[in-house]
Length: 85
Image (cartoon, helix red, strand yellow):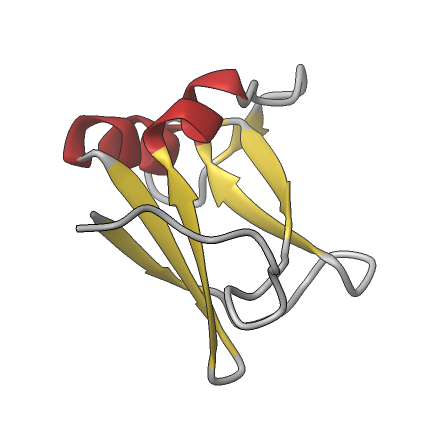
């Protein structure tokens, strides 16, 4: 599970992650987003459905990246049972 701490939400409801972070999350079998003391877990099946935006952004350090927006729904708010271990 790849963990990412998000400091702010775009339009108050979307987490933006970079395309290479999405690839790491897929390799690690899932994504855990942490925002303001709340946690959202994204399973591998949902990660495979996500597509990066068409615009490439120039990094301040090296290379380019594209953003992937995920609607932030904390696990405590979801009424659907999550995966069992």
